[in-house]
Amino acid sequence: MTTPFTPGIQAGRLDAATLAARFSDHTPPLDRHEAFVAADRCYFCHDAPCITACPTAIDIPLFIRQIATGTPDAAARTIWDQNILGGMCARVCPTETLCEQACVRELAEGKPVEIGLLQRFATDGAMARPHPYARAAATGKRIAVVGAGPAGLACAHRLAMHGHEVTVFDARPKPGGLNEYGIATYKTTDDFAQAEVDWLLAIGGITIHTGIVLGRDVTLAALQAEHDAVFLGMGLAGVNALRAPGEDTAMAAVDFIAHLRQADDKGAVPVGRDVVVIGGGMTAVDAAVQARLLGAQNVTIVYRRGQDRMSASGYEQEHATSAGVRIVTHAAPVAVGADAVTFEYMTEGANGLAGTGERFEVKADQVFKAIGQTLTGVPQGLTLEGGKIVVDGAGRTSVVGIWAGGDCAAGGEDLTVTAVAQGRDAAEDMHRAITGR
Ligand SMILES: Cc1cc2nc3c(=O)[nH]c(=O)nc-3n(C[C@H](O)[C@H](O)[C@H](O)COP(=O)(O)OP(=O)(O)OC[C@H]3O[C@@H](n4cnc5c(N)ncnc54)[C@H](O)[C@@H]3O)c2cc1C
Ligand code: SF4
Image (cartoon, rainbow, N blue to C red):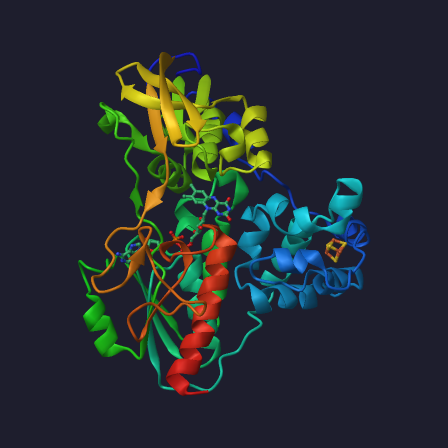
C-alpha cells in the first residue's frame, strides 16, 4: 500500500472506501420535496432570460412550472424536446455561466433558481419510464453520422424521429464521446453516460458501429456514396503540444481523465505525489481535482495568463482550490524535467504575452498537458477556419451534402450543451434538405 506521501507515480494511494466517497456524486440529486421547494422560487418570468442563456433554448419556466404542478414527466418532455441529452447536461452544464447566471433571482439575491438540479430531477425520473418519442413513418433515407458524442447522438436522434435510418460510426470502443471518456467521474456517476445512450437509442432506427475510424476504416467519399447525407461530429481528438523540451514525458490530461473514467478500480490508476497540470480550462481543472481525489499530495495548475483569462469558470476554479489544488498564473513552461518543470513568468501587454526572463521550478513527478484539443483526421476538401470545420448557421459545411457540429465545427463554445444544439439544428436542416420539406 502506498500513501499520498510516496514519491513517484503510484497506484493505491488511498483505500477503496475513501476513493468511493471521494468519487461519489459531486452534486447529489434533489428529492421530491426539495424539488418542490426549489421550483417554488421561480418567478415564471415572461421573456425569461434563462431561456435565452440556454444554448438549447429549453423553456425553463415551463418545465419548472410542470414540476411545481406535480407533472415532472411533462417537465422532462419539455426539456428533451429541445435537448435530448438533458440528463447529462443537467449534470455537466456550467449553469453558473449560462441559465443560472441569467436568472433574475441571481441578480436580485445572488442565489439563482437551481435550474440544473431541477432539470436532473425531471429527467432522471422520466428516464426510468419507456422512451417517450416515436419515429415518424420510415422515409427510406439513409444518413451517416461520424462521432457518437453529444453532437452525433443529438443529430441521430432527431433524424430518427423524422423517420430516417441513421448509421453512426465512432472510433472508440464505446459510444458517448466525451460524455463517456471526458467528463469528470464525480459529475456523472453510476455509468450514467451509457444509460443515457441506451435510453436515446430506444427510439429505434439508429445503428452504432464502434471501433470505426473515418479516414482509416471508411472514407468520406464512401459514406457520401452510400447515404443521402453525412454529419460530422468527430470532436477534437488531438491535443496541443507544449513546445517545451522534455514534453514527451508529460501525459495528455484527456488521456488521464479517460483512463480514470474507464477504470473499474480507481485505486489501480497511478498518480504522482507532486502533480503539475499545465493549462487553464475545464480539462486542466478536472485533471487536477481528480489527481487530488486519487491521493496526490501536491497538485498545481500553472496557467500562462491571468486567472480572469482562464476558460475554467470562477466556480470551477474555486472547486479546484477547495479540493486543495494550487493555481499559479502568468507562467509558461520552459522545460519538463525528470522531477520538476521549469517555468518562466509572463507579462501580458499590447503585443501579447512576453517572457520576463525570471524562472522558477515546480517539483513534479507527473505532468499533465491541458492546453487545448485539436481537430485531427478531417477529410480533405472541407474548408477550415482556426483549425475547425467552417459551417453556416444550419451546420452546412463547404461541401454539399455534408453537415458538421459540436467541437469539430467552428463557432460556439466547446460545451456538451452547444454540441447537442448544433447536432439537433443540423438534423433539422438535413431533414429539410433531403425531403424537400
Ligand atoms: C476533460 C474534459 C472535460 C469536459 N467537461 C465538460 C463539462 O463538465 N461540461 C461541459 O459542458 N463540457 C465539458 N467538456 C466539453 C464537452 O465534453 C465537449 O464540448 C463535447 O463532448 C463535444 O461533443 P462532440 O460530440 O462535438 O465531441 P466528442 O464528445 O469529442 O465526440 C466526438 C466523437 O467522435 C469520435 N471520433 C473522433 N474522430 C473520429 C474519426 N476519425 N472517426 C470516427 N469517430 C471519430 C470520438 O471517438 C468521439 O466519440 C469537457 C471536455 C473535456 C475534454
Ligand atoms: S430567470 Fe429564474 S426566476 Fe425567471 S423564469 Fe428563469 S429560472 Fe425562473
